[in-house]
Length: 275
Ligand SMILES: C[S@@+](CC[C@H](N)C(=O)[O-])C[C@H]1O[C@@H](n2cnc3c(N)ncnc32)[C@H](O)[C@@H]1O
Image (cartoon, rainbow, N blue to C red; front, side):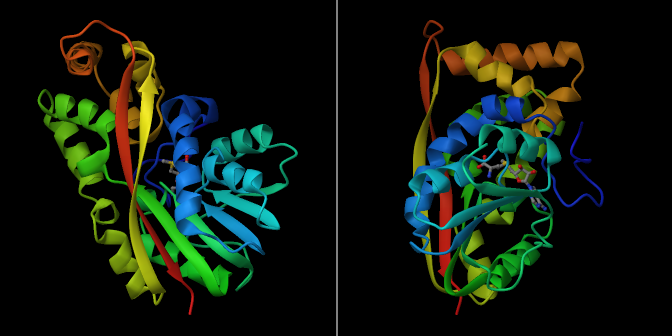
């Protein structure tokens, strides 16, 4: 089942149809990012924490394992991802829900923190989502987010999009939308945080490594139909897809035999306090 169209009135631009496929594509790495993001955000030791745009649960599980908050809640618009997260987190005590970040189904001031990892840039009205995160967090609590630094710091996507853009103007247009979205730029989130009335706003930058066993380990998850890459690849005629694969393989290998490659991935992070 597809979690809605990529364009139109659906409140997400992220193609999210299969939790297991997302795990291979990105979840295995967003789990790694989550520990660093939780350390950056520093939610209080007491109170509930909300994971907004939780996907398959990387951040929610990390928060629950850290044990500090009394309870973790998590919400995502994509029912297939929430179903996957529920089954993998059975027994962790996380309250998962399907819903829109722009209309959070929680009472005012009910959380100590609301954190959104890699999701806000896929919410068409991100300012409304931040207003909602602020509304559900108590005064003194934390509103935080992380978004990939696509333009300057995301090697696995650079490899794909820059190679494809040289062969297909459609890929160039998709890359430019993703890489130059306002929240992925250095000041995008801090400006939005201040405009939303959050105080003591801090920006950070978090780098992880994505370790691939070989080219197949890098390439095959891109074909699984998740996110902007998946949506683009699904629409390609077979000959063009083969040509892009051949050129991306050459870029991935960079003249050395196939085998392990370690690619860096950097996210911008922001945290602010509810006055
Ligand atoms: C790149 S994934 C990140 C998932 C997860 N936070 C992680 O770190 O792996 C982006 C997520 O944002 C979710 N999303 C996009 N728009 C949303 C909205 N309006 N409300 C809730 N979730 C949304 C998508 O369904 C998807 O799961």
